[in-house]
Image (cartoon, rainbow, N blue to C red):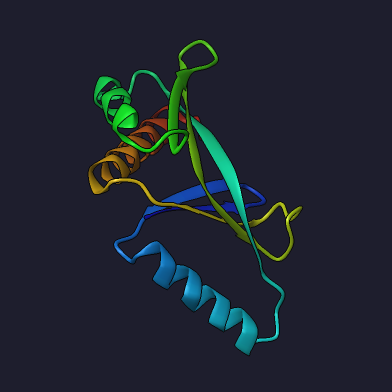
Length: 132
């Protein structure tokens, strides 16, 4: 499972081995027990990565093996590629700017996306640019 954590400064990506359903059930139980509202909504999330990160061809190939619209990988601005995921938005309300987006893809695809993001983050720290 991929987990994108959106906050006021950008987002953070995590790769979790916990099944999506178990993670959602746990999150729901915490919200109920703590008397906090929780919104679960099918949604999409996207982020950009520099096209200089290796293995784009492999991600493009893997994206075609996923279910339709689960993952789109497209060039966007010059020098960048957009990764768009279909999944579930988890937040206090549907319009919340901070929250969590979770998506389930094949293990290999999730791992590759996570590694590409980690590489891009490392490159951004070295160059002084930050993607989030």
